Length: 444
Image (cartoon, rainbow, N blue to C red; front, side, top):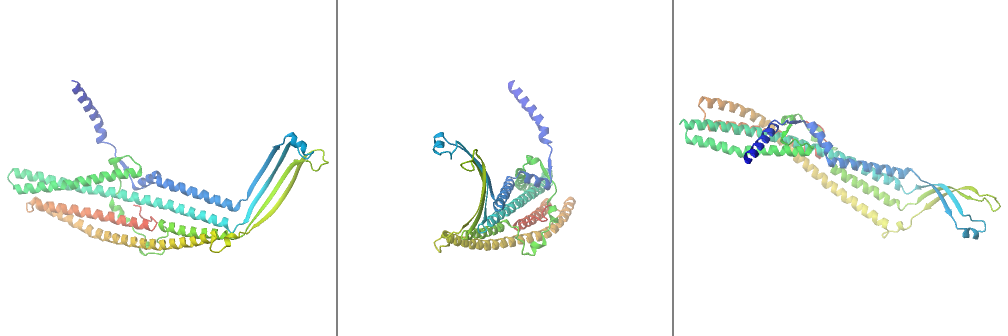
């Protein structure tokens, strides 16, 4: 009796949840929405944004060091014991008050402030480039994930339709085998074809599910397999690679972040070398003080009062140790900077050659994909026509079930290859745009 109650309660719970599971509302997501969600949820982009804000603050700090003098106000109060005051014979007081204002400024320091500002500006520009590069990386990742999901969805649909067709053929063959119209060989052959299609269908179904889950994780949604993406792979046929990339314009790598990083490193070393050279130059500084002492103006004065005074001074400093040849720290720092600059220039030449090779490989894949699209588009059309002819001949009894299945499979295979070619073309365009540091015209 207790078991029956438990079973009944479980059955009721399943019946209550089943409609929600079967008729759960599918969440529709466009490419634009997916991209906006990814940009708002991506932690790498948020960190790059903070890095940009930090470098901007450091740039403002360097500007302040360059233009703003050191300004200060001072006020002091001291209390002396009576014994010390008595020993002063009237020149000391138990309470002493002084204050003043001072302004100090380095007038010339071998352009050190200017070069410090230039270093911060280089860092700021690099942080801004990194922020843009992270955004481009997100765009590429979301684009590939979006169209990978659509590709897997189409593959699942094609595989599902093919399996369903083979199952129908199997049922038809089995019925005719039972009636003695078809041979056992025909029945076995139909069953083998159906059984062979199941692993491929299961794989395409799992690939679609996995890509859906991965895509939801990328954009921060929790829809799982209830996610429905708008559009299809044919949307990518409207995307054209910018002409300047095809023509190999000299500026194609202008926004490549790897090259920008190396160029920034070389420029930073050159500016740092200027800072090192500045240590050999004289420095000039100025100071102004305006202060008061609360005391008697002279020994004959009856009362104390605030006595104001000011001083203005200039100071010239000339370093000598930095001019010692060979052994001075300054001289060896300059040698190190020159070696680092030469090393980074070699690395840049190497990187540029690698980027050109990558670009050539991607262009070859793009050309291959475009040729495959043209050929497979015609193949799909021919396979569709062949399938219709095969179906008619099968209905007329002039074509075997195996030959019909081959026609059906040829059509499905042509469509699969066609959609794969569309995806490969878009993938190559994304790779080239990413390589050249731009995302012009790749949004579907």
